[in-house]
Image (cartoon, rainbow, N blue to C red; front, side):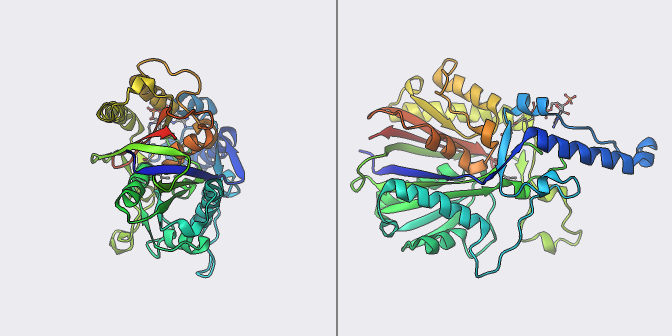
Length: 371
Ligand code: CO8
């Protein structure tokens, strides 16, 4: 008998959307200026000329058409190329926690129970506002939740790791219900001057409530959760609290998101597909009979390949939910946006899969069945 249930989810979408064309125009203006400013050194062979980006490449290689961002002004200014997000005072709620609260309010409203019935808050995301105090505790305070709260980071897989942690808490009786939030301002740590990756990420926040089965009236039974990690250097962010202690200085590029995208693609597709099929088999679920896949949203070609391997056929339209065309890669939030947006048509007893994969490497599978 399943012991944990997902009764409701929530989504906060930042108000500004940034198209590929806007992103590429800014990048190419930067390239033109850089090449003009360094014309002599480029001619001498001392500096490599930069190459423009293209809308066609981005859409074909990734499937991304646009992304939501918390600030567009800096991202469309070739002299800035980072979001403008003013620092807040210690008396104000932090930007990331505020987004998480918005997503959480929606989840709680859909749940239809008071926040006081939640006993724990987990903030599971790629980039935390700061080392401490935890964002999760800010969210807990903003919503008047009791119990305990903490932050955890498993990069793009944070949400499934968070759901498993929450499910274990309710199954063991540590909490009646857990609020798990995924605020992601990926634009804060993306190098918008890097042609290979400037288009990859967007900003958003999602929320998931996990509740003990004996208290829940509707929603989704969690049939099983499984986590996997395997060390890889192919996706890294070296920003951290020891940066200021390095005598050689903080550097620049490698303290932002960096990846070997091709290698990630090649290595992660089999890792994730095999994990899904094995976990399904252990649960007695036929993977080819899953009604829907809500996969992490990193790359359309990757998702299509995993979909084919798991379902054993080309997924029919809507079977393998794609939201990255509108949102880009939103790290931990991607699979939850997909789940949140595309589950209304499930009948009782139908089964689907929430699955994440990302840096670490890390991957998580959560099979759910409509109650
Ligand atoms: N415009 C035009 N051409 C380009 C561009 C561009 N912008 N970029 C590259 N090209 C060119 C290259 O120069 C290359 O040309 P050539 O063949 O002449 O050398 C050609 O296009 C092909 O380049 P790639 O091999 O790099 O292109 P791919 O087809 O591999 O596509 C992708 C690149 C889209 C990045 C793809 O590899 C991919 O999506 N891989 C998977 C990545 C992935 O899933 N990463 C997960 C990261 S998320 C995570 O876990 C961390 C979360 C942390 C969040 C932090 C927030 C910042």
